[in-house]
Amino acid sequence: MLGHTWIQPCARPLRSWALARAPSRAYSRWSSYNARSQALRLTSFQHPWSRSEPRVLGAMTSPAPSGTLLSATHGLRAQPFCLVRRLLQSQTTGAAVDQVSTGGESSSNSQSAAGPQASRKVVGYWLMASAVSVFGIVVWGGVTRLTESGLSIVEWNLIRGMKPPRSEEDWEAEFTKYKQFPEYQKIHRDMTLEQFKFIYFMEWGHRMWGRMIGLTFILPAAYFTYKGWMTKAVKSRVWIIAGLVCFQGALGWYMVKSGLDHTLMDDPGAVPRVSQYRLAAHLGTAFLAYTGMYFTGLSVFRENNVARNRLSSFTSLVNRSAVNPLRHSVHGLTMLIFFTALSGAFVAGLDAGMLYDTFPLMGGRWVPPSEDLWSPAFADPHPTASTNTALPADMPTGMWRNLLENPTTVQFNHRVLAMTTFTAISIVYLYSRRLPLPRSTRNTLHALMALATAQVTLGILTLLNSVPTDLAAVHQAGSISLLTASLTLMHLLKKVPK
Image (cartoon, rainbow, N blue to C red; front, side, top):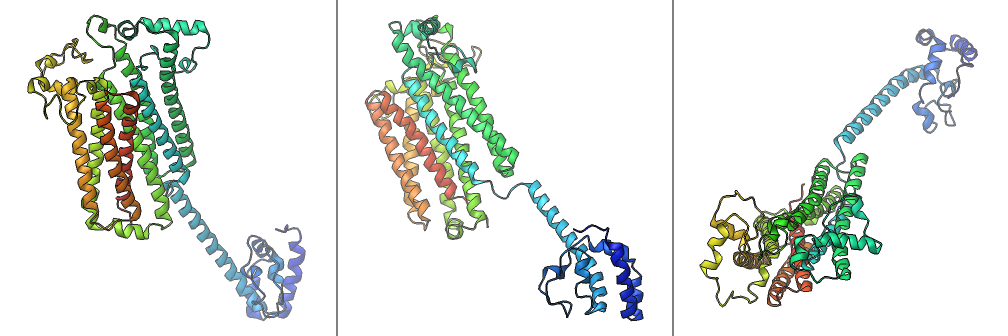
């Protein structure tokens, strides 16, 4: 942009030229504008013809210089009448362009305030990586329980607990603390320091993994929120999951505390173990966090595919009304798989898998005797050698407590739920073969049926072999794998917005 110091000397010759050459009508229009103010206006915008090819002012044979009064005087000898008219029109055009530009900016700003139309794909990859980490810690937690390592660390220090013992004096101090609690005094009196180191590192690794999940989830969630890379719906889900992750850490210590209760020493037949209620809550919360991470990650990928119009053929098949029964059935299957896995937590918490190591019969019968299923001993709310409940002593009595505390009833319930789930999956699988489905949906149905068969087989083998650690760990991994297949199928059958 040229300065205005040269405008006044140029304005006088311009006015003299207009007096000499222009008719009176053109001069009257020209003289209504002060030459100085008009020149200043010309420096405030770039004229449309200064950016185009030489086609406007007749005798112009080269593009007009851009920006200043030079663009207005370029080709001035050709058509002075057109020049004045175009100067007036350019002022109106410039204002309209500014108005359109301002409107575009405000529209962009309003869209930015409303949030992006689709979350960035990096958010989906991060959620999937977090889900894989939760999958791993669930399996690791199962191995920790199976090796009876969960009660080896008798304190909870969020920061200091990150540093394991290093010297022999540190190890002896930790071992001495462990010796003061019921698990050592009732079960592990012959444990050596080397054996204690193994169970200590199992529990320490589980806790450190949990801390890592918390950091790698909450910090990226805060960053993505700050950058505005998530839609409003995804952002809400992410922070709900973050709350679940924090709650899970506190719940884990609350569960461990139930196994460190010194009142277990008062009953000679009591077995030091964590409360089955708290164990089920701990596992259930982990499953909920995993479900949220995995399903939200899938939703982010679908958002991006919809935004790029990559699901046209897929949508035509999935959105058909004939798929509605299958869609609703898969929702029910997912809930059934979740509650079956939750019932397995009660089996693990009560060591109920050790009672009946036969299948399909239980003690030579399809259904155990009623006096074993509904024992009056479990209606007593006070902890005994057989029940070992962790509920308040003033809890009302009731035979219904057999469902959650009687090992015989708990194992029977898990068997019934497992076979019901397997039968339901088989029915849904056979029904789906009649429907025209996308290849990805069809393959996921095959995977769901195969995983269900494998999970039932693993459960039976675990039972027949009196719950060995390796089979039991794979069985627990199979439960979350089956849930993953069901969630994937539920996502694939979800209607795609048009």
